[in-house]
Image (cartoon, rainbow, N blue to C red; front, top):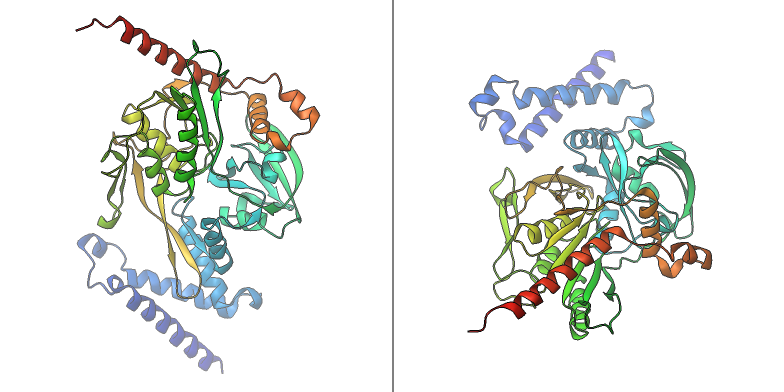
Length: 437
């Protein structure tokens, strides 16, 4: 019996190795180049993998953990996690969550997460979400979720844990690097409503004609409705005499690249390069431009306000407006999430999220891990960041919180607005002093 079992195991091992090799023809050596030839062949490596898989399957002490789907899933998870923080294996539940995200349909606490320097960090907090009301800020680190240490969990595993039925609680232990403070909170999950364009207004009094009218629009993310919402906001501000615009992209985690390009087309000339991507495969090398038939808007001066929570598509837009000298960038260096992830479905209902390219600004500045540097640096203290977060959810504040916020002045927004006012006044003075011909 022992011999028979061993023979069966060997046969399964060989069959698995051959099967994997057939799925990847290069493994047979037919397409291997000279460099691959000097190394161990792919077939040999796959044979070792198959051997380990078989040994674990038949000899591991806890049989309930040694089912083939579980072992293969864990192997794929480890393989992709070893590449970079954004490449991931998605089981069926996680893949469905990703699909729900793209449809803006999920319940949770409203946090955008990433892995940075081996720690699970908050990229940004969605407006009006339970996380925002609990005072969670960008760059906070999550140490525990429901008493589970996050140091051995992937971003997807934590994100999945944070999701759940509306009204159910989740416990978090947070560490804030800026203050070295650790605290424990409990947050109730809610249906997340993803607003895009908010807080469109004129800054300052409308009545005083001697003060330039500076418009303000905050974009919280880039989705399918962002451009339509932005056009409506800009049309209203232009009717009210807007002479300059502050575009607030702070704590904007990104979203759809196409949406960011459409927004850029509102401020840049037709056929302007917004961003390019480069990868190993030729199909990943692309240049994204504003449409040739894009309608030109007034060329009023612009400032874009960013911080460490501005990521991905928000960085792409800020980088394009900066490189093409369309806007001054005010605030702090952005997050530095400048890589392209492709979600590739697999036959069994799972999927992989694979980094396939990197983003470059029009001047070929690499966004990934570098971020966009501000033209005018303006920082917020930890207390000012807390008050800004409260301001973004003003409608949900009680009287005591509103009183606390009454004296708050946003230094980054003030710097952006004052810069634009100076530009408008200087431009008007230059026009008046220009010699008549």
